[in-house]
Image (cartoon, rainbow, N blue to C red; front, side, top):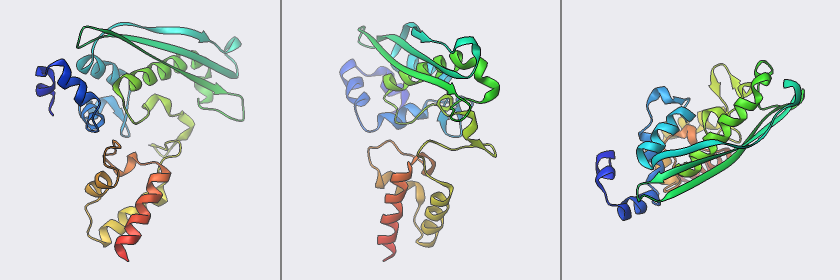
Length: 215
């Protein structure tokens, strides 16, 4: 389904599509390149797409806030709530929590940004609430801590490793397999589009299937 068809559809048809396995890819296609980082959606992009597909946001705010004392090392946590006026004129609320912490040994926020821990946690929590409303099967770019960035490439928590990615690329080339089709067929309905979207566990399963094909 394309955007124009979706917008013209009745509420029942929209609901069926919203609950279908095609929905994740449909949402991701509505994002502009400027609204993504390394294939991950940014929160500002999800805000726009959420209103485009789901309905007006009539309330969006942190509902519980637990700041770091004195903007020093520690943990800031935020519960964020978003209410939509849905396409069927009902009101639906989605909420989620996120944190930003740095205790000197463990962290998910860079040292230079610890003074913005509360704002970072709020943005991450909003992103998670938007992801929940949009039924997305990926995290937002803001949920990836700065210290996981290496040579400009984001490393996703428990995501596919560089070695796995290189192996799958080589094996698909050797077997003359179109890699994007292989990923979609291997994980039908799971929302994967590209190799980079796989988790480490799913990449291991891909390698097993490729070994079977080769044998």
